Length: 346
Image 1 (cartoon, rainbow, N blue to C red):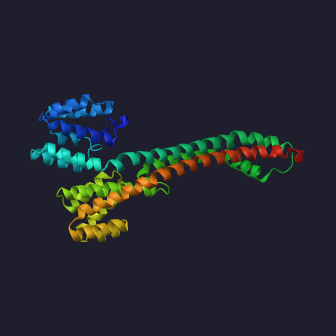
Image 2 (cartoon, helix red, strand yellow):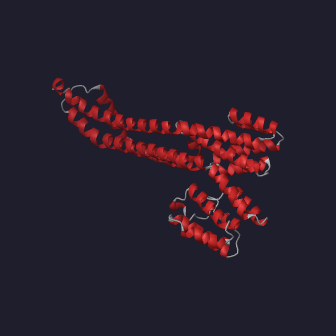
């Protein structure tokens, strides 16, 4: 696989949308594509975007079409958008096509940037807290607790139940710290390898990610249908737009069902899509307004996302802080509890 030269520079979806929008606006003035790219490039404040647009400009100067250049960067330009651009160039209709792409990406802005970034940030915060809990607990159990345990044992007597539990846990950590570390690192690797599945099915943020996937997929499908694409082509484009292999596989299963002459509502039901989407598909096909109905479904889920995302993130972050404080607090309390009982022990 070709290494992405911009991967470390964090080009966001909104950066690509802004680039296409500015390019479309400049081409309205009848300047050449190379000149328009040069102007847009010089106006970029983010170095990564400056490099990307410069690379595209170089390609176009070397007689490569704009679509061919975009195709080199599928992580920023989805294949179905590249195909639409290619058709626009062949029909000498580049400006109108770019305007359509801008309209599409603007409609996707909510799910592709703001909400997704907030959820990713909150998920990262959770794993950072989890790592801190593991590190602090390990240090206390392996290095601090044994010192206290030796000190308490010299006084004789029975330790408080909580303290004895922590001492037993410390003995376990000291005896098996290598397997515990291996399990922890294995969990980290597993989460990295299966991150797409974790996003979709995680108990805390999974329902939010699934709604984002619904918005992306059906907004894309509606856009493609409104531009005279076939239903299977529209769903294929939706699978590209979600940027999640797990969810894309569900959409591909829908297309497989359609290839077997199963209706769209039945296919959606078999794959496991929400009843709201199934009902919209049935009504849309019946009224021959499938694109509009799917767009309405995307609007509904977008409003739901706005309502539930922020409260969910706030509650989750608060719970993470409480969990960290509780675990560390219990360990410290367990160590100091015998001191309060020292008189009875002596």
